Amino acid sequence: MARVKLEQVRKVYEDGKPYVAVHGIDLEVEDGEFVVLVGPSGCGKSTTLRMIAGLEPVTSGTLWIGDRVVTDMAPKDRDIAMVFQNYALYPHMSVYDNLAFALKLRKQPKAEIDTRVKQAADILGLREVLDRTPKQLSGGQRQRVAVGRAIVRQPQVFLFDEPLSNLDAKLRVQTRREISKLHRDLNATMIYVTHDQVEAMTMGDRIVVMNAGHVQQIDTPLALYNRPANKFVAGFIGSPAMNFVPGTLTGDHEAKFQSDDGAIVLGMAGAASKTLAAYLGKQVIMGVRPEHLAMAERSASDTAGDTVRVRLDAVEPMGNEIVLHGRAGANDLTARVAPRQVPEPGDEVALQIDLSQLHFFDPSAQHAIGREPEVPH
Image 1 (cartoon, helix red, strand yellow):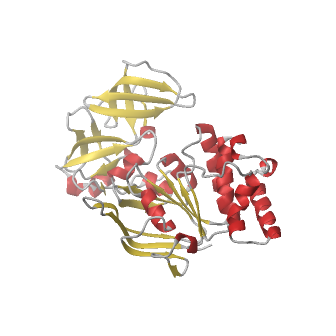
Image 2 (cartoon, one colour):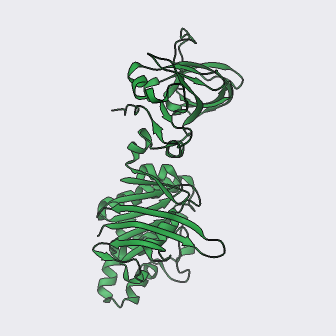
Image 3 (cartoon, helix red, strand yellow):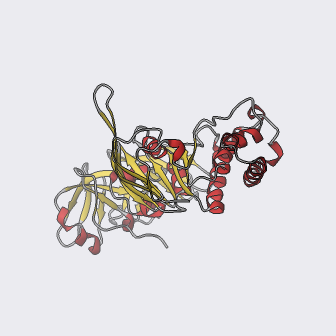
């Protein structure tokens, strides 16, 4: 296996009006690391992967695989294997022949081909279907065959371009576990593209969050979740998404946050007020994740400094939790609460906010400000 390094790699499409798809990405994927590129459609993640594969030419910058500069190298010479969203299997060939095809093109010895194909089939649980054609397989089995074709090549780097998008929810969960186990078993360098932040959080050693061709943050899943660098990352990572409330920081010795409409007023601890001192009297955006709101005790006071009254628009009982959607004044709020009691849409409830888990963002630059929320142990 090998490391992959991108240095100021940029992609511009010149057809008609020039369009910058990737704005100078810097990234180093260590040997044996599983890195996920995640972001909304059009953010540049698949374009970046295709430049690594050699399927898209690099406009500027330098790309290494191992110790070789491969910026202008043909895809076949990069020693990579790519798994696409569509399985791209040969419909007239058996599973065995689909797995063996690339090795036959390279004129590998027949015994070597047989050994590699059967090893890949054992790893992926395909031994029983080697004589079947793709139309006789389920969607999950077809995806495993596509992964198996990559395994038999024994490449330096595996590249995955949204490989689970065509699977149903249950199969996606099962297959992402299989790919994660495959990474551990092979100790392979893998770069994986997805728009699904749940896939990114559950699979990646590190995650590269992209938006509009720019890298927003590169970090471990929990660091992204607990310490987002900006409002985009905070809102993209996590489901349901983080709540955002525009308002102002006020006060002298002890800061308070007040929403623009005055419906939410939160007292801040002394330590928090010190780190936010530069923003006192200024506009900020407060962020809080749904799980950091809880149903307040009946004795809780609305003036306690951490409680807000919310008129519910929708209630989603999930069994292990209840997701509440409502409004506090003009502010939309979502909460994930324990299923002890199930309120009704239209009810007004008191929600208690964990003040130690508040995030604050600059409304202009969108970067995170103030004290980093505590990371749960």
